[in-house]
Length: 303
Ligand code: NAP
Image 1 (cartoon, rainbow, N blue to C red):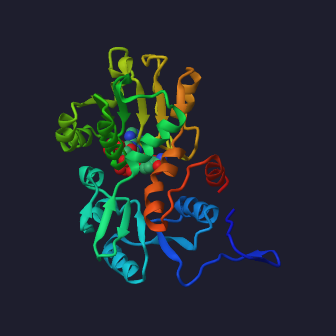
Image 2: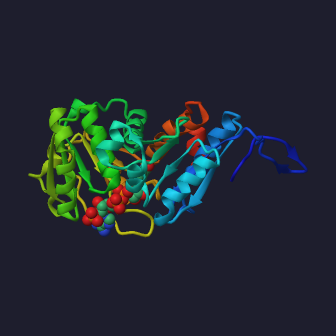
Image 3: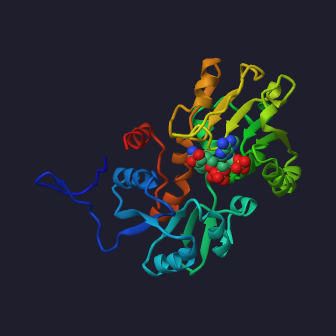
């Protein structure tokens, strides 16, 4: 359900865009399942902003052309999503430290000086989601175990290192990818006094494995997404005080979270990460720092 601010004539709603409207959007391929237009649309409406946020399907070969065109058309900036995050980072004139660390950008700003700035807010979104729903979690509570070594895992591990987590164990189906991720982030980890290690995914729940000391257990794989298989995983080795979170949010209650909840573990779903990662972009383009409130969550769940 989409709602617009503006006049309501004869039951029809009209957005209040003027010639001075600020424009932003999201570029992906495909893009039709993106929740970002609904998310930013909610905030544009809530804060009565003269602006629009538009989904754009752009083929990888056309990314640079599209960005140049959007800049020429006066856009403030865009989000970029799969498969463009790495390519977008390469097209930026400068990157935030966190985008540089993971060689990927999801939030681009067309600056007034003609330069393109790139940020990566996935890790921030992850941490803010944990803070919102489990304020008791602190980086020094204990080691973190992560399933997955894809793009999202990279941003999350970088953020965990920055937060001061001392030990992160990564278990991925393709072990070489987990080792590559460790190689990429080890320098930053060492500088922060953190230790990264890999572990076999098929042995992750064994009693002598890393789960027994884990304070935060995260699924960053796409396993458990609607229509996909689920992990056959035991949570028995995990301390009862551990926090469990899944960044998959379709379904909201993934098999991973359902199994953890059945063991009375504290669980956090992945929707909040999506909502929080959008805040810096909206703030940059529309000059309002938006709130991640229950109305936004309900709006996205109603889509
Ligand atoms: P990605 O780069 O493609 O990585 C996918 C990860 O899932 C890899 O670690 C992959 O392992 C693993 N995987 C896929 N199928 C598997 C299977 N059958 N068994 C075991 N592992 C499997 O994707 P991504 O960008 O990191 O995204 C991962 C998930 O997070 C997606 O579901 C995405 O929608 C979600 N996500 C959520 C948010 C949010 O805001 N909540 C943000 C970003 C992503 P291999 O390396 O072995 O292939």
